[in-house]
Length: 113
Length: 114
Image 1 (cartoon, one colour):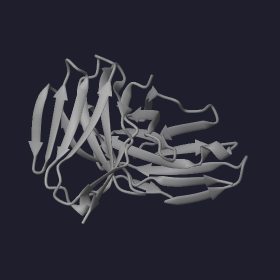
Image 2: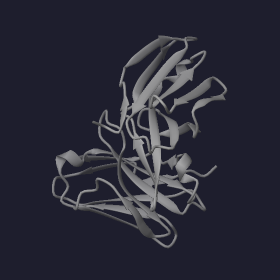
Image 3: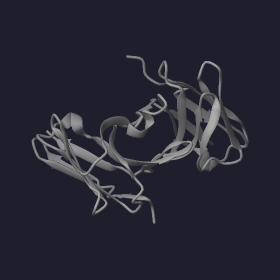
């Protein structure tokens, strides 16, 4: 079983829709939770990060973490065609040598104009 | 703002050849990470360096080696290339201690082994 599970999609929504992206994890040692956006043939770009359970909002994006359920979500409001990309969740656990990151497989999102 | 620079952007090699990928981190970032991302796969951690010393090791094959130089740039050396090595190779950098909140990725090197 992978440390981080993410539905690969693909997900296709009309412009203006609310998008919900989700990941589950099994390692309770994960302390930091991140969402990356990756456009085709580009490197992942950090969108949001959070540490504690609860919600964190940044513009049209809201990251939600539920540590008790080992479940994280990214909500995109008023989705735009420019949001079309692959979204990767990532989690990290501190180790003596630094922070070890684990990624989900990514969810491919297409926002249709 | 300066980003993580990787070179080359694209590389085509034949089986059993060698390849060297280069990564130039963001200025004042002292930690470099290497990831391999196959088609439709999540990035797989290969190796990381902090202050020119290897700090962590992931699923890096023995045929691969890497190092970080005095100017903090890093090189990933790949020998005896196999078809399965075809992937996107990403480098990322962070300032030590800030890495727990994620780090900045380069645009990647697309390696194709034929």
